[in-house]
Image 1 (tube, rainbow, N blue to C red):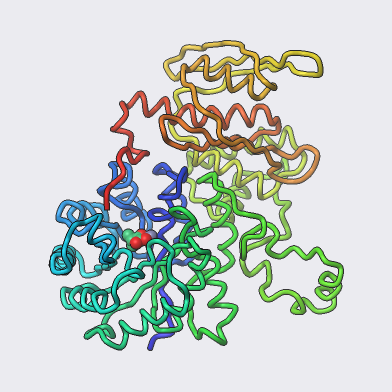
Image 2: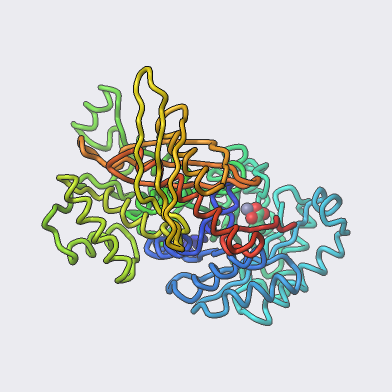
Length: 520
Ligand code: KIV
Ligand code: ZN
């Protein structure tokens, strides 16, 4: 049995199903490039039938990201499969992933189909995908709650029909390690032809067991693991890529498996995904959390100083935590900046790099020392910038004890108009937000607001993040500046711009947003 573990990343598909994590095309492309640098084998780039935006993103990734297999998801019907093929066909290594639920609950209540019908449709779906593409994956959705004998029957039939990978999803995160491992063992010992295909695992984290369940299945011979950066995904998320990869690597003695992951890219990729989605990584998160390698107890610190391995089972640098962060100064040139931007894992074209360079020079005038985090903030702002209807021209705020906080803001519309307004608020930032709403005529519900320092020092840049609800959707915005009120205004304006563009394009034709939930 092969000791090679295939890493199937679904951050851009299952991860994007995380509430509020929807991404636009440039953001998805940036993440896809980062996943390639990380060394994943397969990128599930999206669900092409779900929206024009999903289709475009999968197609762009298939055309532009070379190296990994590019996969598109499809339900077991002709329209989905045809659309998935259209999206991935230009990839050097395309894959179509078809799925159909098999559990009794899904058969009875969702699909209203008998077992025979499920088998027939699964086989038809795989055959249709196979007519297009050699590499076909099949997933019996909710496999972990499916009767084992029926699961084995479905798996055998789709293998016969030409599936090259069969994935066993624990769609609702219900499984526990021994039981899930037993299901994999049962399939490997009963299904005819199972040795010819790759058995895959896909675990959700509702009981906090996604990584444990995946690892238990690998021990029983599964050789593909489906996972997401930071464990992003529906509800409590999916199996976290960084955790499963580092478990396999750190406990090579136990698992005996190899991956092609460049583990030094784990932390930068985690930060990229967190910044783009606006979903923060908890501090004590294994592998990539800010405290993952922080030792507080005196006994531990003493032990570490005497011999690192007393309290550390992995080296922070092996997962990409860097200690040398001070990189560039006022006199650094374009070349040095380009190298640094590339080393941080960004893929900017010449025009984008030029704008980042201009931002860098402006920042260097205001700030003595420029850190990696500052460069990342500039590069990410460039990626996030997208088309904007409104830009911030100027603002003024007044606040203080015993006064009413107020703001005056001037915004420029891309048709050339400059509009200004003033408003009062609970504080200066609230006043700025209210003024922006007044000018643009877009009222949102602010759900979350956070400010943090991007780097260190008194002149550090502040990063503001806002989460708003608008017409039932959650949107995130992010802004960076040495002035936190400006950072907040930029973050707020970013979400306002996303909404304004959607309105301009007419709701329903927005390529960034899945306008309808696709029933599965
Ligand atoms: O969780 C699940 O069942 C899925 C399938 C589409 C593979 O995401
Ligand atoms: Zn899933």
